[in-house]
Image 1 (cartoon, helix red, strand yellow):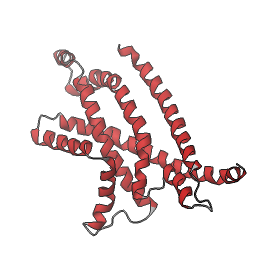
Image 2 (tube, rainbow, N blue to C red):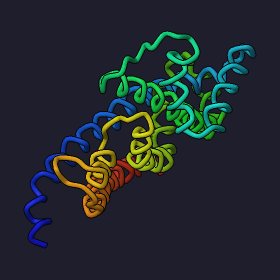
Image 3 (tube, rainbow, N blue to C red):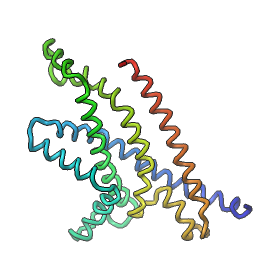
Image 4 (cartoon, rainbow, N blue to C red):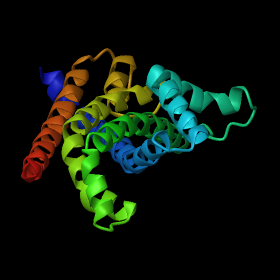
Length: 228
């Protein structure tokens, strides 16, 4: 116990650094995937069939393959196959590759949620808007969008909570997120070796952050109850 207490400041500092990397990946993914998912959803619902088929094919491939495989392909493919290591070997390159992988993956999942939310709004409301002389863009932003947001908050919340845990997959390309930091003390880091207890502390970080997100998303869902 005395040894653990002596090692605690070193471990906490390393976990804090790893958790900051986890948070960066989390927020970058949301900022990129939320709008991209809407674009893909519009593409999937497009009346121009080539665009619709292309978007649905992308969604099918991304949702049908593991995120870990996508990470490995996006990070290693340029260097090993194209002989053009565009990501480099540094932490910044690994973070960029991981961000691209997560954004594409979650955008495809979000796109299906968007599509379901949009198509779940009664068609009669769009027809009523057209009768009143509204443009389709006005109908979408003033009628469809607000109702869609209400419908998609629960499934989006689930995906966002899943994203927090999925960020740990980035360690497959040696991105030094929080689990990488905790696992490093098993292999030998900062003079500490064979210590498994730091991994239990990583679980606390995830639990606290997921708890905060659950409360915030729950409040958002309650504020949207006026659509009922």
